[in-house]
Structure formats: C-alpha cells, structure tokens
Length: 253
Ligand code: AHQ
Image (cartoon, rainbow, N blue to C red; front, top):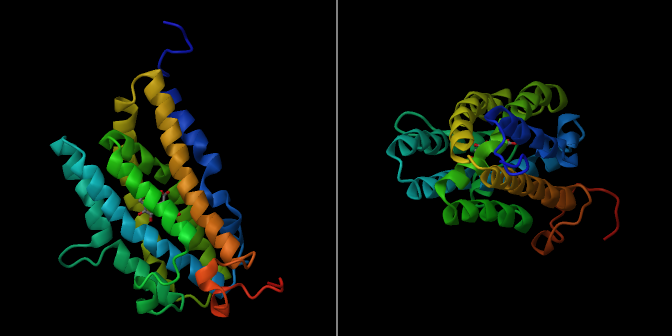
C-alpha cells in the first residue's frame, strides 16, 4: 500500500496528536498575561466568569456524546465525566468548585451563574463545541476532548503561579484545578485509547487531527474574545459603558 495512504503506526499517530499542543491555549496572550501575573483583578475575574459557561456546557456535551454512543462499556466510563462536573450525593462537583473559584476571586455567586458577563464570542465558541458533539458520531466527540492531553500543564501552571502572582485570591478557590489534574489524566487515557483504535485508516487519522484542531480553535477563540474585551478594551455592545468590566486601559473609545 502506498505510504501516503497507509495508516500511521499508533505511536506516530499519537505523536502527531500531541504535536498539536503547540496550538493549545496555554500559548494564547491572555493565558501568558495570566501566567506571568500581568492580569488585573478585573481581567482575572472576567476570565473565571466567562469560563463558567464552558464548565456548565461540558456535561451537556458529554451527555450528547453518551446519547450518540451504542457501546455500553464506553457509556459507563464516560458517565464519570458528568458526575465530575455535576457532582452527586455528597460531592459538589466541578461546576460548584468553579463557582467557588469565582467567589475566591471576588465575584458574587449570582453574577457567575447568571452568565451576565459571558461574551458573545465565548458563548458562540462553546456552543459550536457542544453542537459539534451533538451532530457527530460518538468517536468524533471522544476525539474532540483530546485537547485535555495538554490540560494538566495549564492547571499546574495556575496552581503554582496564582498564589505568587494573585495573592489576593483565597487559596481554597484553586481546588478546581487541583482536582482536574487527576481527572484529566484519567479521561485522556480513556479517550486516547478509543481514538487510537477507532481512527484506523489514514483518512480517519487525518480527520482526527482536524477534529482536535477544531477544538483547539474553540479554546483559542474563547481567549480571543476575552483579550479583545478586557485587554484591548473593546468589549462587545452589551458591555459598552460598563466600565467595571474593562481593563481600565487608557485607550480612547
Ligand atoms: O476544566 C476543563 C474540563 O473539565 C475539560 C473537559 C474536557 C473536554 O471534554 O473537552 N476539556 C476540558 C478542559 C478544561 N479546562 C481547560 C482549562 O484550560 O482550564 C482545558 C480544557 C481542555 O483542554 O479541553
């Protein structure tokens, strides 16, 4: 079979998936400002308030994937992702931990859960992710979660960096990131094994790379919207005049 159409060996396929980490949102200017202590408190609070929309959308995305999946063994394991975010009897879950992160940063619970600060660009990017999983086969949905290959690094960066750069944030608020490192490792091990097995032709492997690039674009676009609104001080129409949510930079409007 022609080498150009022969499927890559699994280790090469995995390496190509991991190479996409160069486009991960850890490299986005907003996250570089965050990691180097250059975000103002308002810009950090805005990030938490916007990312809340992503966090509450993950269980909807995972439920859509399960709805598309006829494989009981996969569904049984994938269910844990919903529990991790929604919680269960006796365990608050990640969404509640994210709200506590927001409160630790000085946000009120009501302004987080009301989604009042969620930017159009953030909402559209997150909705595009959920809609992609809803309308795709479940294996494509699994593949789109593989950006978490790169997530433990960004969570560790926050756990180590925020206490130094943002000492005004209550340390307990960082529990979301601490919990997520273990969960992300566990989830990616499951998701990667499915993808390496299911995407078994060259065309499917190329498709898998496209899917991960799409999800990387979702994450990057969310950060673009926040950078535009809170760093270049060009919030969308519904924030116009709401000075509390701009970076207070000197640009004239
Ligand atoms: O907190 C995050 C999370 O729960 C998930 C689920 C997973 C998915 O199914 O797409 N991706 C993801 C991510 C989370 N946090 C992001 C961050 O930077 O804090 C990273 C993101 C991801 O890498 O996809």
